[in-house]
Amino acid sequence: MNCIGVLTSGGDAPGMNPCVRAVVRTAMAHHLHVKAVRHGFEGVMHCNFEDMHARDVGGIIQRGGTILQTARCKEFYTVEGQELGVKNLRYGGIDALVVIGGDGTMHGAMALHRLGYPVVGVPASIDNDIWGTSMAIGVDTALNTIVEAIDKLRDTASSHKRAFLVETMGRHCGYLALMGGVIGGAEIVLLPEVETHPDEVVECIAEGYARGKTHAIIVVAEGAKYNATALSKYIEEKSNFQTRVTILGHIQRGGSPTAFDRLLAARMGVRAVDALLKGNNGKMVGLHGRDISLVPLEEVTSKQREINMEYVEMVRMLAK
Ligand code: F6P
Image 1 (cartoon, rainbow, N blue to C red):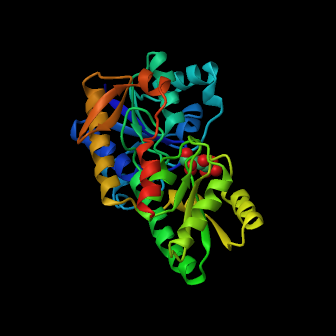
Image 2 (image 1 turned 90 degrees about the horizontal axis):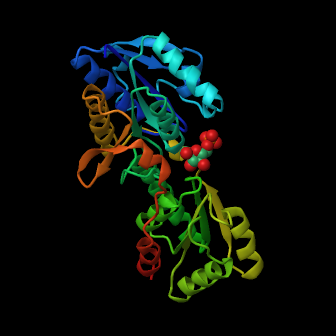
């Protein structure tokens, strides 16, 4: 193996840049050439490859987003696209690849592995919906953004005795909403994984006010059955509570990676290159307890990560 490639794919996540830096510099420490693949798998399709040197990843450790840029590539979902991808990578002199991204990216990595191409995945997605790691790169930064927003919203909520509905990202996974609820001190969280009737939310707000609370914070995952806007309408129709909606949206994906995310990114990037050097292909690096270890991509792409239901009750209990 003379040259490895590195790409970021799917939704960007804070910490992708320090991970790219770790991959490039670890590879260089082992006297490997490194090529960047621009725009994720789209770059694989169009041979968008560029040589990388140590200085190319200078000054990016603190930057959000990804300097390699990213994309969601439909073409790469097809077997023809994947076969063309392997051909292009080989033609471009890239002997093995580190792919950094979310759930969809790991499926892309698995496709390359199935075609016999050496690949290692690094989980990076604010959603934390990837099986095989307790934390993905970017989750901690997103949670810090969420908690900062909730803290600010509580100031205005309690000044006006209002109920605030805060909508978080996460696609079909309620992790961000659930953890945001715990650390933001929400009254209740609404998740895709748990069906909650809107009357339960009205009741919860009423009970809180009856106990002397001056605000209510309701965290709603974007994938929940009722979104924040629908829920707000329902509450105002059924009660005399004043509500306001804040959809946090893409601000959750931006910003400088936290210390936790930078450390995770460095450890995972180093480990990914180490795995390729040892011929440990077809794996994803994952955080298990305090350790970074390898999980087969086959498992990652065939299993569904579940959220810990204990936290749902914890939110309600601690809001008392
Ligand atoms: O996967 C990350 C994520 O931010 C999800 O939480 C969200 O549903 C989706 O990406 C939004 O995608 P896009 O940026 O393409 O609108």
